[in-house]
Structure formats: C-alpha cells, structure tokens
Length: 165
Image (cartoon, rainbow, N blue to C red; front, top):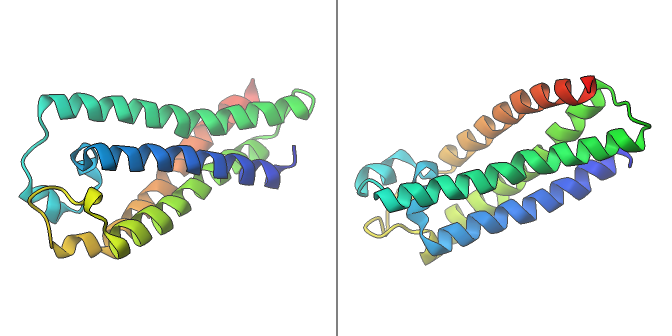
C-alpha cells in the first residue's frame, strides 16, 4: 500500500475507534477522563473513587492497544507488501502520520468543537457546571503538542524495531 493511503486509511480508522472510546467514556462517566480536564476543573472535583481509578486503567489500556496497535499493524502490513523490508524512514512516517491524524481529529473535533464550543452536558463533570475552564483552548492545544511529542518518541522507537526485524 502506498504510504499516503496507509496514513489516511489507518489514521481515519484510528480516529474513529479512539474518538468512539473517548465519547462513550465521557457519556458513561466524564470523571474517568478527569486527568485530561483543565487543572481548574480537576481542583474543584473530588478525587476519583477506587472503582473509577480501576475503570480509568481499563479504558486506558484498551485505548493504548489501539493507539499503538493500529500503526504497528499498518506498518507491518506495509513491510510485507514491500517484500519483507521497510526503511526506518518509511516506517516512522507511516506510524507518526497515522497517530498525527488522530491527534488532529482529537484536538479539532473533540476538544475544540465538542468540548470548547458546544460543551454538551455529558462532558461536564457534576459540580463544575458553568466553569470557564471548559472553554480553555490553550489547555487543549498543550494536549495536542504533548500528543505530537509522545507520538514522535513512540514512532521513533517502534519504527526502529520494525525496520530492524
């Protein structure tokens, strides 16, 4: 598969899957994603219960399996289609590109459109209604930049492993 198509197909697939996980989690209990909320909101709400912490770990593991798994599987399939060899650069660009598509979708659609602009009731944690922190665009931009940095490191490591296998 061509590199550009791989990034788009798998990036969109990853975005749909991870966005669904995020939205279902928010709808079920937004406190499970408390660590992703601005500090002002985190200060106002009670600490997560033990049960919420366990649920957060479960969601996090499930999320990470897709976040890492889809780019790795895509790159391994690409390597196979290239006759069993893939350069580090192609492996890196493929994985980083796929994760970046999700990062952009998460930032623009979930963070800026849904949370900052529309702010539906299901994203609001009880006791924080009306807080201006929900409109904190800079918080979400910082999250986007952190996501890019983490995906750079992850993609570098995984591309190295895959290109050497």
